[in-house]
Image (cartoon, rainbow, N blue to C red; front, side):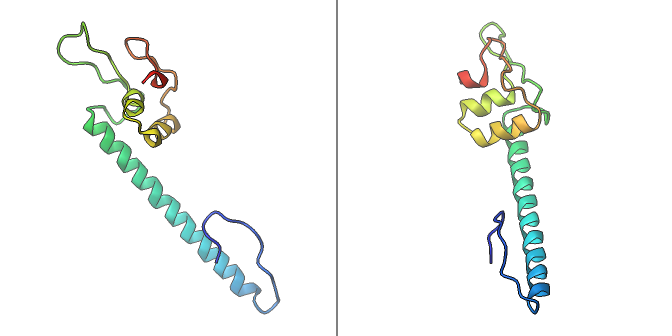
Length: 113
């Protein structure tokens, strides 16, 4: 059997054509289910990250600093994920509309972290 995401053709004979089609269809369903499960796990990981770091569920909203505002920096989720080295979360945030070059209140972008 071919793994998920691979392509190519199976050798075909008249007697095995229907079996190959059903095997191919089953493999596609299995791959689709696997991709959905991975996407769900990534979404859950992102939600946990946002909650842990006191952000809303919207990756485009900043977290305002608490306490004395003189020395604190307003950060967006993408800044914190980049600072923590969580590139997978940064990619997910970009796919959900986070701005790659969003500056913090001190003008730093995710690349600066």
